Image (tube, rainbow, N blue to C red; front, side, top):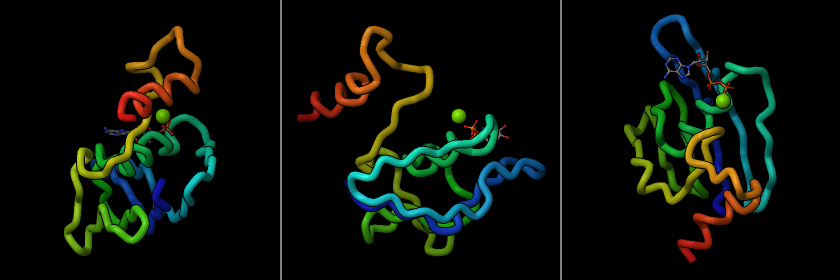
Length: 111
Ligand SMILES: Nc1ncnc2c1ncn2[C@@H]1O[C@H](COP(=O)(O)OP(=O)(O)O)[C@@H](O)[C@H]1O
Ligand SMILES: [Mg+2]
């Protein structure tokens, strides 16, 4: 896994709703990281921005030293070019499989 770096990542939905406010974090290869917080604090929005499903209002995202998003540099790699994925909370999951099997299923199919 590449090192994922978020720099001042911000997402504003419309005028009133600041979903993510200048988030800075580094996730290194092999690290197990949990985003913990109350409903509506921006966890899903953060994952969607890393995957490229949501466009940040501000900031930069790097996979190792490759910039996949930067508002200043005008970079926004589409999800299919990021080679990264995530499982949704309650959509497209196999109910008969464990969490581990749900996560490994796609990776095993990609060999
Ligand atoms: N597509 C959207 N349009 C407008 N507001 C949104 C949208 N998605 C999320 N939000 C708002 O952004 C905030 C963070 O939501 P979300 O990332 O889903 O939180 P969490 O996953 O931590 O529960 C909430 O206030 C939510 O209402
Ligand atoms: Mg969520």
